Length: 106
Image (tube, rainbow, N blue to C red; front, top):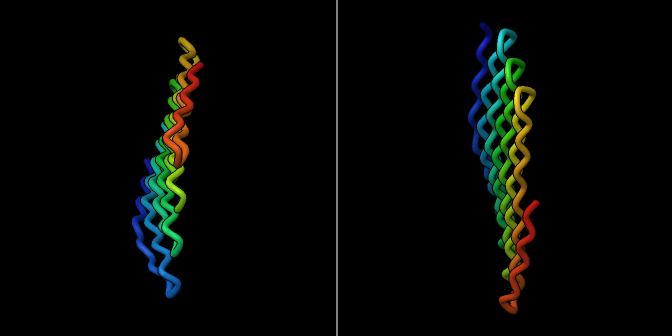
C-alpha cells in the first residue's frame, strides 16, 4: 500500500496565502484528501475540501466556500456515493451584499 502525504503553506509577497494538504493511498483502495485555502490581497477567501475513495464504493465529497470583498458568500456541497446505492446531495447557497439569500437544493 503506497501512502503519500503532503502538507504545505505558502505566503507570497503580494499577501496571497495558500494552504494545501494532500493525502493519497494506492493502489488497493485509492484515498484522496485535499484541502485548499487561498486568501488574496483584496480579501477574497477560497476554501475547498475534496475527498475521494475508490474503488470498492466510490465516495465523493466536495465543499467550496468563497467570500468576495463585496461580502458575497458562496457555499457549495456535493456528495456522491456509488455503486451499491447512488447518493447525490448538492447544496448551493449564495448571499449578496444586500442580504439576499439564494438556496437551491437538488
